[in-house]
Length: 169
Image 1 (cartoon, helix red, strand yellow):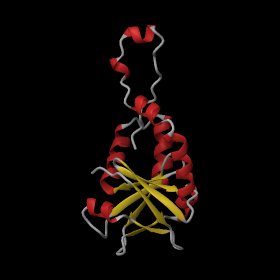
Image 2 (cartoon, rainbow, N blue to C red):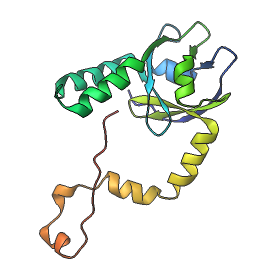
Image 3 (tube, one colour):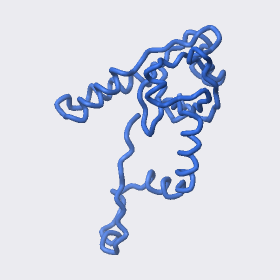
Image 4 (cartoon, rainbow, N blue to C red):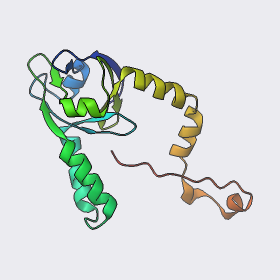
């Protein structure tokens, strides 16, 4: 399943928002679909379909449990993750502690990011987008850069780039 798109939503007084019909349909069910909401990055919340969340749990199970970053991430991520079910009206409720973590206001933005969705406060997303969109080409070059394909002449010419590996979500 590939999740894409940008959707502006409003949180109601009970911290609920409607899941876009296209997302619900791609999951094969308009009600009863299960999601997991967890801390995301850059001030967002990550909303995973059940299969994607299970894949993350499997990936973490394969990582070294003795590594301090693995332990810390597992604690922070899984302790704050919440299982959510889509209600009959196609809505999800954001738990108060997660809404506070991401500083969600009344208007939120839901974006598709491959295997999951992210929830952002609308103004925070606009700020992020205005900053990062200006660097789109640079970011794309680095994201798709393959350091193993470089020849030694690149490094000798001073054309060596530091590449930050993409983190699994």
